[in-house]
Length: 526
Ligand code: 1PR
Image (cartoon, rainbow, N blue to C red; front, side, top):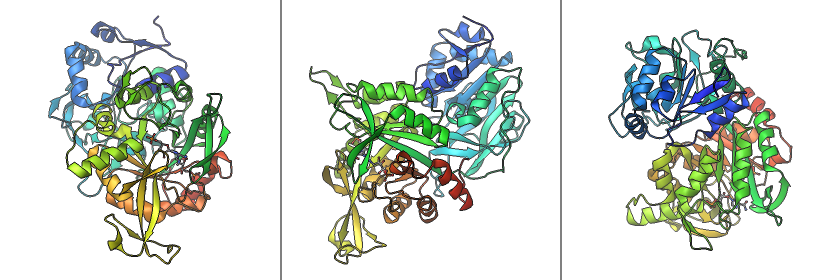
């Protein structure tokens, strides 16, 4: 059907656009999928959420004739909204695995963020828009934080300046949106940017009305620190998934995953993570409840969703083989924005450090090649091991802030697999550097000693790891009070802080954490 409530979606099958679909439906619109180039030309309103790599997207568009249809649609100044890669593809070309030619609508070259000065890449998280052109689409969005996840961007130049409607600062000032007549495109993800993003999307979907106005707030200039709510889930005896939380990885039950996740979204969580802690034992594709939980959660949660647990190659009881990529793809299709790999990344890193060779075959490498490294989180589960001197172990040690039980002044952080059950001969530092090299886009850094203790994050550990890599590090385990959040951001380079217990037990609301951080001068999305 067609009509005022229908929007045409160009999904060329390269990845997950479920979040965009969910957001459009949530706003009360129907979606018609593009099947042929003619559908593009005939569209009333077209949303183009680019996913995957620039080169493979252009290949598909050229091969199917959609590239020309898009150029024609845009030349006619028909209502168009490009998202993320959907913005980048409008430019002349990209450096990503290239140079690769783009649609050539706007002058400019898409280049990687420059990490040579220690800038953390990918640019993941909530950053503030600086509006440079008055447009209905971005009405009220000046200074608002919106969610970005990308490693490539376009810089403003004299040739493209009149297209630009907002810029954002990360290393350099890059183009965060363009607007010309009916042609709109955004580098950020409106479908994952909470209320601000939904109102931008709504404005595009209802071109003749101004949509909901978001009040303007103080201008921000830095990438905001993220507060992430984590739900550790496992299946109970009845096969239902329950949220569970314990103490140093010893677990007890708490509540329903979807309800909790949507509550956290409403409460202001910048991201929600699901960790299937029995994933090392239960096969996730057999574990249908988890996929169902994701589907339902992604219909209500308009901030990024991460899911982890059990991402590895698997052969089921009938001898059917599933690759880790299939497992991950199923998670993405069900609504995950990122997947997180624990045990399997440890094995991959060990093999890589032993041989010095990247085989390209590990789950980490495969998933990050297909979905981009920004979609792959590596979850590290280390345990503190005190030593008398740095020479005692072949792993990176830190001088600890609190001495060990026998007065030890140093510690290394030993990685574990299978939910902390088995220890491995590799440290958190060595693992972090290896997985960065293998294509991880982010590190979720737990600490078994601190988990559920409520005594604060392990500053020594988080500092060591966040100083060692140039990808974002999420500090996890041990949050017990609002002060622990400001402390971790003041003392380390962590990009985000994750907590489970204090949010589940309703001891500290997310809003209280945010307020505390604002008062402590830490930039956050409010
Ligand atoms: O190895 O790829 O199957 O992934 C398994 C995943 O499940 C890993 O990410 C691993 O961290 C997690 N996991 C496994 N067993 C447990 C357990 O608790 N028995 N949970 C577990 C890990 C740590 C965090 C927790 C923070 C914050 N829990 O998820 O949420 O420590 O807690 P706090 O704020 O209450 O202190 P694979």
